[in-house]
Image 1 (cartoon, one colour):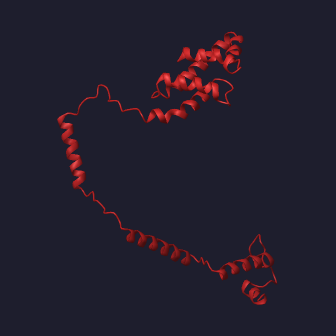
Image 2: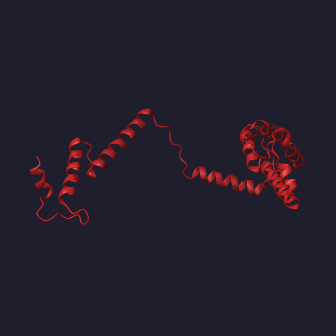
Image 3: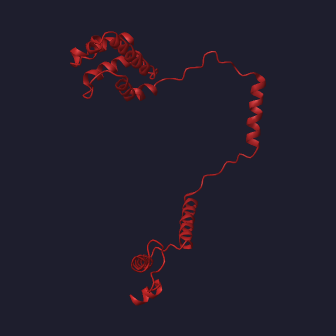
Length: 199
């Protein structure tokens, strides 16, 4: 992949009018160090997609260099974005590879696993039958009823009168109480008296 990326960088001037390779070359030793770090980042990014064949990676990167309208220079972020865009196509087609040098379980270990699984099954794992639609609807109705009872017991009412009473209480508090202390101002009526006077 290293040679491929160097070729890509060298051809950017011709294919896209980008002088990235020339700019790095003009910096001398500092440019060589930057090129080395860039190549390492590009290769590391490609290695993250190890399930995509190298030929496919090269094909995708070459094509995206030509047709990506937001391509301004070759960097690891762009390469990751391009490869991630096609990764699902390759990831789903990979077959699981057997683990190399995998050791078979000894008969003693297999016996222990079988006994453990048997104890689990005998120890009360219960299969719950699927609920019918009527049972599910009954549970939903119970939940709704419980929510209503809880709201009512907490003092919540959803009727118009309750809302109107709350508005009046806010109005009374603004007129008749000290908003900092919450106490009734001297000479002002209580809420019940205020309601009687404003009916």
